[in-house]
Image 1 (cartoon, rainbow, N blue to C red):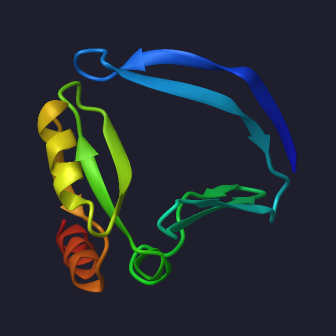
Image 2: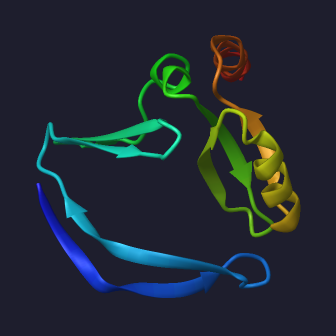
Length: 126
């Protein structure tokens, strides 16, 4: 693993009204079969694992993310760009406010076995 810190972090504005300031803190390069874990103050964990073919972008959607108190959701913006977001359990109201303020649409929650099986069934019908 190699980490190159941006000091100071590069800042840029984003969001519907360009009111959100993001700080780009650096770049992390993983070798195949290396993993990093991101942590929150509340104890949530989020793993990213590099493989020789790409990345596991999330832990298992319906087991490990749930254990880490995160909920995966597929979201679309007004420009038809799609994002997978992870919402901390208990912070759904904050997420709903963010969705409204950014004019985003929730396509589907992908955080439970039931929802994932429903998506799989729909895809196999087509």
